[in-house]
Length: 495
Image (tube, rainbow, N blue to C red; front, side, top):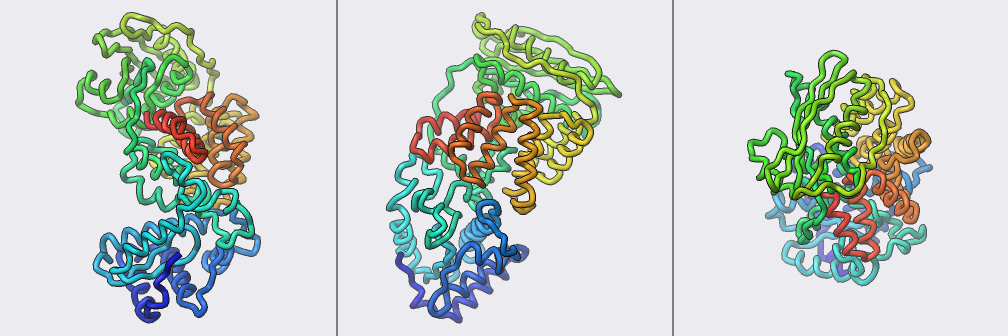
């Protein structure tokens, strides 16, 4: 790799570093400040120091000697954040600065160049990083084109950096999530997801030929806006029930929620969501009673195919959702033709109303990317109902999200997340969300590729409307060069 270090004045490099760390963008980013100063000092040393991930973890981020990069992603996450902040700084506050400081992917080593030399430097970096590995083999290019994952995984690799391995796209998520709005919650989980979505937005997706249904957000008729989470959660659970029917393409919650409180006509909404059938309705609860109203509309002919109300105690809310889903499927038809197969919807049992309420609150926080609050609510649901399998899978996802978003150290939360997955599967071996949570951890943190593929594939089969599962499987397939399969999975994620 070509570097311009010999021509850079050390005093000017130090001044530029302080200019950056004192900028508005870096003012409150103490970890990025410390890491930048450390890497610049290492680059200016004579001879320049080779910085290892372990060294950064113990000397900069106060990790002890037991630090294990296979479990703790702190350094990779912080390097990604620093890389993104530097890019944003030079695009805004530092756009006139003469000296550029960059952190290329590939090693924990900064590159300093004069602005006039930056274009040539960037070209050299690109050339040095595209000679082998995953990049040239992948159609969507979701992963950086450096060395192979197997090579980088070796302990004796000179950079000792797993920033380049799958799961190391933290900085990309922080930068690109503003342009990726299709997969809202899980991803919050997905530090890789923003980048994947950004790339896919530039790929022409084929139109699905499946019969499709969209469940529009049920209106909250309780009279209390604070109860919106209950209406939204009921909608999401109804979507999950319908997604078990193989003949239906069910539009995900992440897509339909954007139509909440819209004034558009049903025909316009159906066209935007590419849905043949729409379900709309309302939900209300009063005391210990819940009532769900729903109707099914064929948008092609503007025919009202079915309508019904379901009322019962809160402890039976999931049974009511189950019954509504069965009736919707039994009346679903497009162009006068009913679905050929019978509904494959699992029976539901009574549930503790307080536990279910905590579970819905947890999902609501999860959608808002409030990982810690989400985990607290899922834990509360478990405390109230220790046999609540879905609460365990929700807890696993929320804890993983805490690690991804830097709210907790991976070694603090991931063992608990894996334990929650295990409990969820013991209670419900068909819990697809639990398998997807485990497959995501195996992909992003443990690099157990075969296990990840098995869990993600099985999890998606059981929970076909789990957007994050489709996204993670898409990224995995793309890394193998299976572009067409990756695009199909990504399409299902955004739909």
